[in-house]
Length: 135
Image (cartoon, rainbow, N blue to C red; front, side):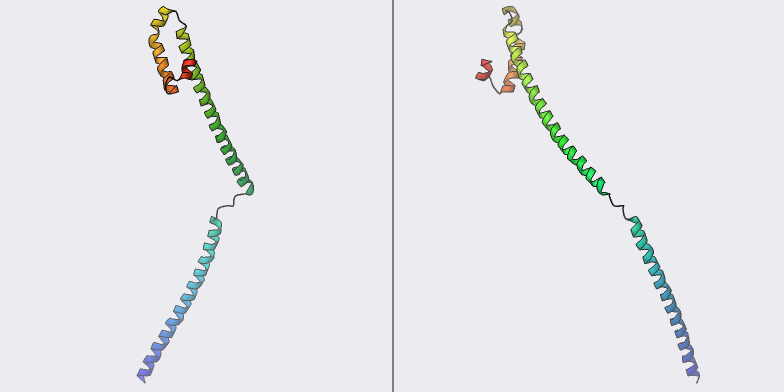
């Protein structure tokens, strides 16, 4: 008989512990579900706001304007560079003609300047071409 009492006590204690554990597991499931809901709400709150359509349209227009402006600026700088090159050629020709038109005494004194002007012209033209001689 004493063996039956011991087994019953142990069984009732195990049963009691199992009920307590099941209750705690149930509470944990409720807490976990509550946490899942809170995390879902936080994820919704953290989402960045959606960009309005008009902002996308305006930014596209600004980008297109910038690209067109850069093309125009490149073309303008290229044409200015071409104009400056033409002005340099004209100035070189003018310097040579001016020095050649000097009286003999002044011409002899300016030969150093004439040599540097011709050297600059040859650099631009690549060499002393017939075109350069004719002008």
